[in-house]
Length: 116
Image 1 (cartoon, rainbow, N blue to C red):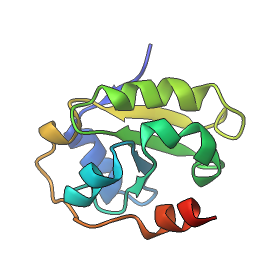
Image 2 (cartoon, helix red, strand yellow):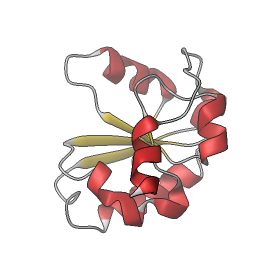
Image 3 (spheres, helix red, strand yellow):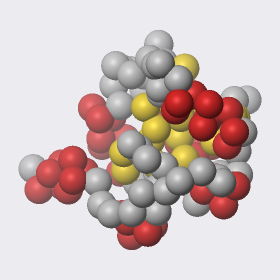
């Protein structure tokens, strides 16, 4: 079973001393329209080929527009080497349920990855 956090719990973690790595698995276009501050964009379709962007993180929270793809992302990430020791959770309800601030724009690091 995939562990899910409420948006309020995610906001509390982000405001804490040791925030998790937030991985937004939305498409690049969706991510550019709005995402959690500080999150990285690794579209679900590219997640397996970009595991290096999340490997070594101690805690990962996956996010997507409605909370469905992020559950799939948790299952995928849990199955791969480099993330086996991480605590991996999904934000329930996705960005539709998020009341906090959003950033707009693209993930520059993701663009650099695509050019390699």
